[in-house]
Amino acid sequence: MSVQTRDTDVEALHQMGYAQELLRRMSTFSNFAVSFTIISILSGCLTLYGYGMNTGGPVAMTIGWPLVGIMVTLVGLAMAEVCSSYPTAGGLYYWAAKLGGKNSAAWSWFTGWFNLLGQVAVTAGIDFGLAFFATALFNLTFNYPTDPPWVILIYAIVLFLHGLLNTFGVRLVALLNDVSVWWHLAGVAIIVGLLFLLPSHHQSASFVFTKFVNNTGIGIPIYVFFIGLLLAQYTFTGYDASAHMTEETRNPAIAGPRGIVLSIVVSLFAGWLLLIGMTQAIGDYAKEAVAVVPPAAIFVDALGHNWAVFLMIIVVGAQFYCGMSSVTANSRMIYAFSRDNAIPGSRFWHRINPRTRTPTNSIWFATVGAFLLGLPYLWSYTAYAAVTSIAVIGLYIAYGIPILLRLRAGDSFQRGPWHLGRWSRPIGTIAVIWIAFIAILFVLPQAAPITALNFNYAIVAVGVVLIGTGAWWLLSARNWFTGPRVQGTAEELARIEAELVV
Image (cartoon, rainbow, N blue to C red; front, side, top):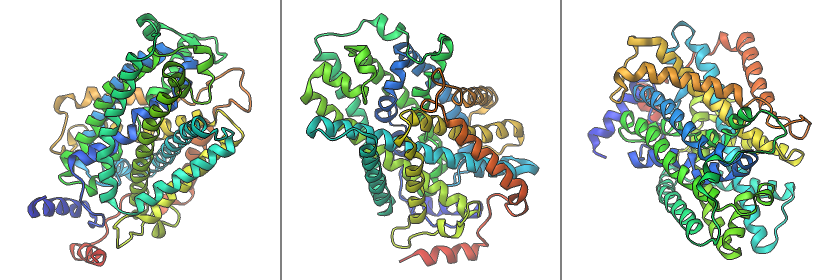
């Protein structure tokens, strides 16, 4: 990066009122790689594959995937336009503050807290999925126990490793994310290729694209199809990471929007190929659908033990990259939100490690929060689906608020160098309608009859955040939270930056 480009990026950040505290070492490709890695088709598609097999079956996966993918592309386009105008680590809540008018602080407050809920939940969902798959891999290789406490043990170890890697610095994370893109693409090609070439039996095209399966106990097929879209909608989360990493990216007003959109589009096509490849390789549907890790059962039945172990190593590796990137994005959001004094103990969470220039305390906030959200699995086997619902609802509400505010702003919105032109309004309108639809859909029951074990506690988690932050706002925060706060004058920003140089 030239000195002139670097200085221009820093000056743009100064104009938004913030010092360049984080290292700006990420390229456009690295920014894309973070979001692509968090979307991680080898994580989302496969960790919820068993949910899809029982909730709609093949048709909900192979037809539901492109349906959701198209809608998410529109959401991503609308977000990317706003990102180009405000490329800062605060991302969504900063956008809401700038577009919220006289109620900007309130919009910013609720956007930030829903984004925080969604970020922690998506980290939990990713690393818990990894714990499931690692448990299955270890069970295949040396009979590792599959009981919930043993899954939780792997979950804790994985979260610790992801916290540790992120603590070492953004350059290491960026390098690993670049590797992750090729790991994912090559991994999908290998898995799909082997599942097409080696098994002696393949399902028909009619089975792959039209077979409907309902093991939920709910007698309304269209309803079951729609709640089955959770597999696709959960996978298409986390691409706001490109926005949260803009303070560490060169030419962020272009790189951030490109990262958001490209990560969605590449995932849409690669993920669809993966789902088709997996579904045509299903053997004994009834047995594989109730396995602890259905994709592992499909691999074993279709390819045998040794090939199954090989493919599981590919999947677990991809999920490890995914969880690492999720902690990265999550910690930057916590860092930015605490920079504006919105989180209890903000001074502590905002602290930067002067050696690595990473928000170390926020990194561990993200990992511990995710661990706590995964603990209900100890007494509820359906807890994982609820965590994924929480991730979808929290993140997409946070995605939708600034898009809605941008629509309300109309021609007064100051476009950045990357924008949608005359397509802004129709794309933004469809995106907001879709977000409202899924926010309602994924708090609804996912099985019947409803019991303590299959209750969708997503509505509880979302309700606690909504009621808790709402009460906090009315009773206290509205008197002191003013939205994103500038860090000082040009001289004060320079002093902050000088103190971090070692």
